[in-house]
Image (cartoon, rainbow, N blue to C red; front, side, top):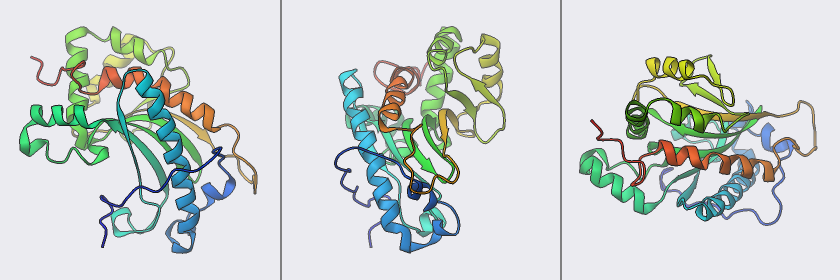
Length: 255
C-alpha cells in the first residue's frame, strides 16, 4: 500500500485553471469524508498543482529554486478520514535541502523531505476560501529560528520592509485570533509578535485569503483567478528568501 507521504503526484491540469463551486463543496462535511467525491477533489488537486508549478517557474526566473508537492485528496487515516483542505506546497529545492541537512546533522535533518518540515509557499483551497501564504510549521523550527536570529542581528526594520511590501496579506501566529496586517506595520508591532513567537512551538504564517461566494452554484470563482493567485505567490518570493534558511540567508547558527 502506498504511504500518503510517498503517493505520486497527479498530472497537472491542462489549459486554464478555473475554480468552481464544486471545488469548495467537496471539502465541506459530510462530503469531506465521502470517497465518492475523490474524483472531484483530485481535479481540484490538479488545479492547485498547476498553479504551483507555474509559480515555481516564475520563482526560478527570480533565482529561487522551488519544488512542488500536493496534499492528499482522499479520506485517509493520515488526514483524519476527511479532506477539508487541499493545498500545493512550494518548498526549497534539493540543493538547498541537502545543504540544510549538512547544517542540521543526520538526526535533525532526516525528515526534511517532508514538505511541511520546511518553510513553504502555499496555495490552498478550503470549503469557505482560497488562500495564498508563506508558512513555517512548528516542525520546521529551523526556518523560524533562522528568521528570529536574523532579526536579532539586523534589527526589525529589514523584516518590516519585507512585510510592508505585501499589502493585502496578514502576519499570523499559530491559531491565535490576533493578526498583524502587512502594508502599514510599525516596528513595535513586530517586536510584540516576536515576544510570543517560539519556533518549534508555534506556526508562523503570512497569508492572504479570498472568501468563496455563497450560493454561487455552478459559477466560477472570480476573486481568486489563477493569474491573481500566481501573482500573489510570486509576491511572497522575496519574503521567502529573507526568511528561510539558505546559503544566502544563513543565520541559523548565528550567535
